[in-house]
Length: 113
Length: 115
Figure 1 (cartoon, chains in turn brown, yellow):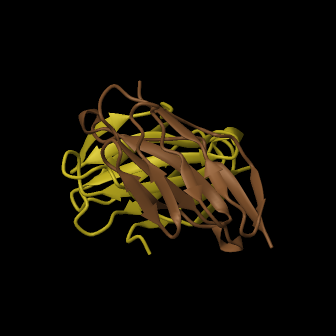
Figure 2 (tube, chains in turn purple, brown):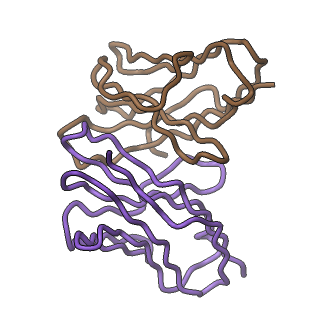
């Protein structure tokens, strides 16, 4: 079945460091791909998304490119801030699968001043 | 604010008991999803409803059940509770199957502690 694998955490970075969180997927069709973020004490919220191959999703300085050839959707940010500390979830959704959202295990990011 | 409301926010109960978690989706959303988030298991999909009908089932235990009512709110019933059921339970909603690219809107969750 469809699944998402993302790099295990936790990840600890200093402020202004570069961030990459790897995400790869397995799907039978052509899924939409998402990154969700969960700040402490809150629910998940959509960070960015891409609906077809080569699309780039971006928001709040974060970017991810839908790579069909490598079945990947890595999350990147050039300069992280303390306020980016959160848990990040990669996810996919396929129309033919009732749009059932499949999540990765989550990666906890801590950014230190 | 996502527009999805979950109650209660916190719940403490004993093993063997039964609890009901409630979710009100965003206005206009027809699909409701339930997820369980445990410390060691990440986010697990439990069940999805669309316009009152069960649409997809994930790793939901037989002790758990859910339903979606005509006003589209949903309830998740957890019975014969065990210590391992302690977790954060999230509800999410979306416009509906086949009508969007799958973006979900999450509530803030209900934290269940079983003692």
